[in-house]
Image 1 (cartoon, helix red, strand yellow):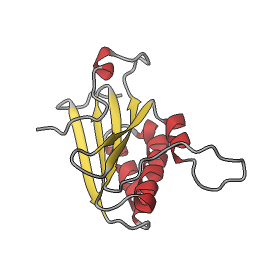
Image 2 (tube, one colour; image 1 turned 135 degrees about the vertical axis):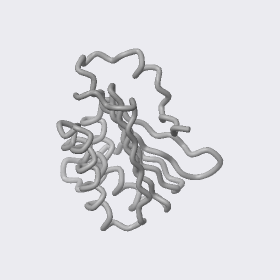
Image 3 (cartoon, one colour; image 1 turned 30 degrees about the vertical axis):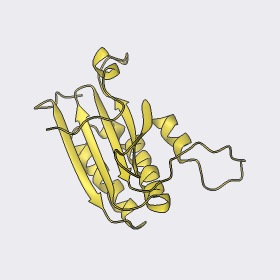
Length: 152
């Protein structure tokens, strides 16, 4: 991966609470990863973004926010909504059509989790990918909080 100037890149979109925006958001994520020279992660990240956004629109409440954070060591995707429900793994039969979102996320991302929003309903569902050339987890990655803080 090429060096990322200034150490951190971020982008954030406030999205309409509308299922039709999921496809457009997937395109925005793909375009951003291409600009950031992270196209090798695009297939997985775009699929995870689509799953998390579909959950936020179908089961959450507005407003919905999508953000990407990239550094030299990793990429983090976050989807925030203000619904009261929490995502959970479902024990599904082979014929089930829906309900595999978190299973897909856990298969494609190096780490993922859910962080409740302070002071009320809502949550941020996040997924991380390591991008360092060395595939071992660096101490910098291990020391990150479960939900990266917004830059000041």
